[in-house]
Image (cartoon, rainbow, N blue to C red; front, side):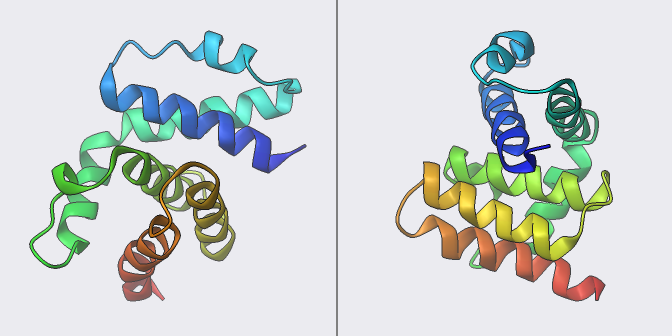
Length: 130
């Protein structure tokens, strides 16, 4: 299974969800050539974010610095952070792996400063839990 490809697909679902609760999961999945296992992993990422959205948002808001709120975060970075948080908190994925994959998503899809921002936010949230 390509976790990277499956996480990429799940990220795109979450990103669309931030703009519309009517996320077209099947349409997004069609953009990728995923195995059944990869499709299930992508959907589990999306479902974990969607079903726990308010809790994730509250946890993220509580850990942002410099008076930032989730409304201030670039939507791509917000989606990436939510995917990593849901993976760690609800899908029991390894923290270091989820953070590394989030940083890679930020490098691929977001701004030049996003990888360090995403890494810093996730490190701030999860260093307390070590």
